Length: 225
Image (cartoon, rainbow, N blue to C red; front, side, top):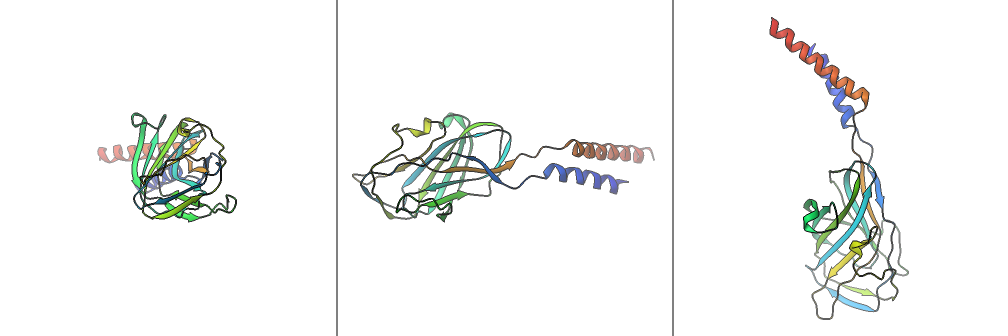
């Protein structure tokens, strides 16, 4: 009896645990204009900050984030602090905060900036449960590669310097410390990866309930002997 009850409960939990394959849950679909006649040396250890809002239409399990930087810079992250805010990206709204390292894959989405090539970056192997709603993602990274970065165009598609407060906008801010350097913002591609949060089907709940009732009955039967 206990053997079969265990099998019933096992199938029930398998039904609860079953989830679909991870897919793109949110894509801001944004691209920015180019930078204007700038040349800077990016030294190892400089920081990069990315903020963007995203909206979920139901409860999801977030498994990763992906973004593209079409700036011709091959950067290696040595540390990334990931923060999810349940409002504008300020400390008081912090919901999730953890340290992780982002990975780079060259031009994975084949999106080009004129004669410039871009890089895709991603964070994988997360398991963050979020309810339906709007959130802000913050990525504060330390870069480990010193490279020369060159920007050679002059147009912008944004006029507001603080894109982090504009819904649907990706903000990237490089914190330069060298004389004559600057910080800038750009709008780019940003995706949230994950799958729907598992919700027990009625049949699964029935199996679980039947198993628990059977287990309780078995326990009472043993206690009477």
